[in-house]
Image (cartoon, rainbow, N blue to C red; front, side, top):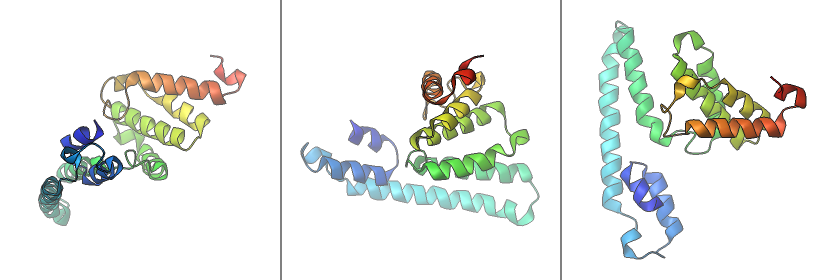
Length: 175
């Protein structure tokens, strides 16, 4: 299942890892597909170059700040498939999400909730349950299904509740 699911995306590194873990045990249909890897890497490189070319004129002039912001947002989306959450690099998630949270005034509530989820997951991965609970408690109800690719809303509640029960003092649990 992992083989087929990863091949629907564009993460060639994870695909290679899954194929190496299968190690030929599932037959020739689950081997390393070099053609797919090369085509996905080429497609990603072309998209990256297009994004850079689109952004460069705006950066030179500093004239249209909204276009610059949108360009960087597109870059963020482009690199999302290899981001730190998916690579289990909780230190990077914590660093960059905390930096982003510092500009709360410029962020909408859904983005703030996504950052809290990312921080909660990073703290959970690092076994810092009290910090994870606090982050999950900060997630707003406006998140709904906007972050399903990372965490389901019911999981936010479950993880937050379990982390709070495991790490909060009795007085902290009372409303």
